[in-house]
Image (cartoon, rainbow, N blue to C red):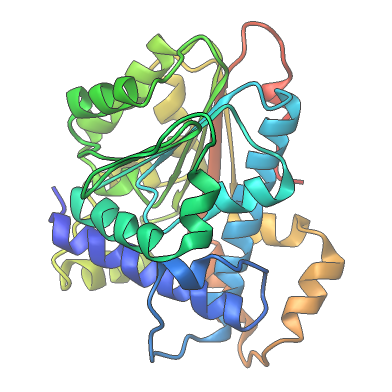
Length: 314
């Protein structure tokens, strides 16, 4: 099992990389600077382009799910960290009935403090009809819930979703970015099976490593080990097939997956050309190597034929 502190550090690194890319104008996000601290570290252009592809692809599927369900749905962000999608969706008036974020207590406590510190964040959650319930590490509003839980302990996840008023009869989207890879395979299997069993109409979007059985993967694993961060679930990151099969094995109706290198080539090319002009990148091979070791996988249960099986990032 990865140490909690090590995993939390990877979340902090990701948040700072996203903020750096936003400040370089890769995409627009006025809220990330309110939820993250600025790092003095410079990030190579291939890192920012990788995060651009990651954020764009995740949001494309998120937005498509919301539009397909006519927003009569729920979103659960597992290991949400400093994610800003709640506020961005509010801006777009593309919002589900409920948005639930879940992470380690130390992470949610920091986010609660930042939300309380910035009026624009808190006012978005506030409702004229219902008071916000605040604690040191949790927030419960009318349509936003930030809760602390260890995702490897299913009973905690179930309890916190219940406290957030989850409606299992509504179409529900689960999101995870580099989260499952830090959880023991059996615990992940238990979680994914529970979701498949409990939610009749559901989708899961998972951004994670792939093709990890090569030298690049070995180096990544060793680098993370040196930071006391172990990839307990890396077995499912061997290939696109193993990424899909983890869902199919526990009762999901269907699954698909794409390497981020392929996704990068499918993104709107006008915008890709725009971001490629932001910073000069000397070696494109480094970007291709990086993108070929991450993927987006998505799975669905759709007995009512809403069209979840047809959703993709293109």
